[in-house]
Structures are given as C-alpha cells and as structure tokens.
Image 1: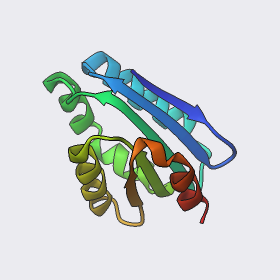
Image 2: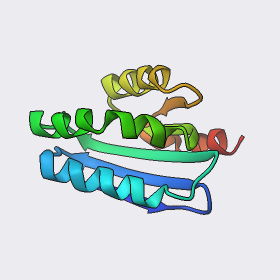
Image 3: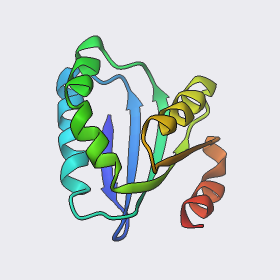
Image 4: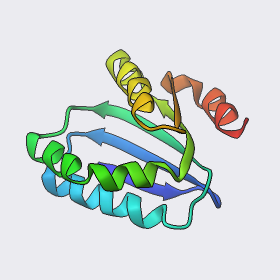
Length: 121
C-alpha cells in the first residue's frame, strides 16, 4: 500500500506498507506527482510499516521515472521517515544525499511528535 495524503498547503503524508509491484508503483508515483503539483518548499512525513522491498518490476518503473523524480523532489526541503527498520532508516538518509536541497531524517515509529517538530523547524 502507498497512500499520499495532503496535510496543509506544503506538506504530504505518505503511508507505505507491504510490497509494491509494478502497477502499484506506477499508481503511487502518479499520485505523488499529482498531489505535489502546487507545492513549494514542501515537507513530507513518511510512515513506513511492515514494508518489504518492491518487486523488480516496481524498481524498473521507479528507475524509468528517475529524471521526473529528481524534479519532483526539488519541491521539498525536508522529509521525515518513521520506521522501526534499521535498514530503511539508513537507506532513507542515504537517499537524502542523492537529492540536493532535500534533507531526510529517520525516526522510530514512536517518535512521531519529534518528526513533526523537526519538519516544522
């Protein structure tokens, strides 16, 4: 599952769980692009619960849209990732290095208040 929920003018909340296949990834990326169309200096709060690596087809869809994703991520300044999986914390913070101007910080699931405060600071 991948849900994109607008939360105010310049923020999106994204809920991720389970495993994404190629069709799920296409729908998720289309929704992300659509809902971030008017965002500037935006913030993202990711809640990642019981997430598994996407299928090879889903990775292919994401890679095929990589140039568009770089443009999309320029709309955002900060992203907080809530997860209890250590590998996802490290991967998400590493991903922040790939997007100039986007700072990504990972938090434990029980640190939602801290993540919200960090996004707002």
